[in-house]
Image 1 (tube, rainbow, N blue to C red):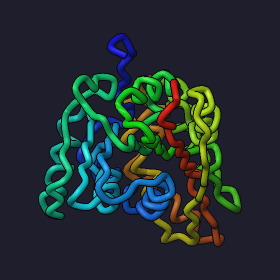
Image 2: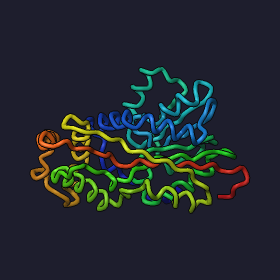
Image 3: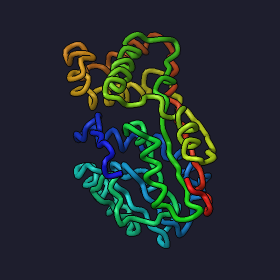
Image 4: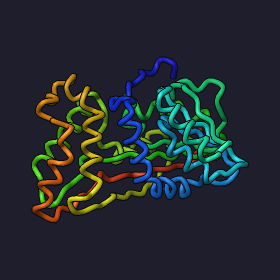
Length: 278
């Protein structure tokens, strides 16, 4: 694992991006909890959250394992971890710790009863290799539980050309940065490649009307990606005009009752059998 490629987080770690991550965490907290519960995360367990960012998944796991358990969140961004620790202090979750550490460098870590992550496998060059490197850090009978998205499933009805253009900037930037935009649909084959039997569940957040959060969420994602969008030759900042993007979308939405389907989220979990050689 030491030779594995390191991947930069293409969305960056600006203050706006950290705020976007916290809003995203609130959107998806209920589904995240459901996936972790179905994966078997429960009181007293030791859980590793890889690519923990500002700590949302770690805190969901902490609620499930309680004070008799422990959650370790890892991330390479000191800025994101500073936010995570500040939120941790506010909530008084003393059984959660965060470390600035690459997910491929787990020497001395574990064993864990569960390894979890959300929206992280799409950012690694080799999802199968990454998960294979995590297996030795799982205790016998340990769980893997990951949540990923299918970006291509995002839809607005009726269609809205500027909305779809903005989505296209995100998808194309991901592709040019070698990020898998539909990792959710690949969770099944990823687990099977490890010799594991995955269980899957999916959901999509749905909103409607001009006041939907989706317009701000889309614009904020574009804002975080804008340096990469320009660097990768997808679009120029002048053409994107990110400061007015959300308002322009809302103005169009005033004329019709648009319904917005957020990207499908897929949760996949599997149990490492005590006798497994995966």
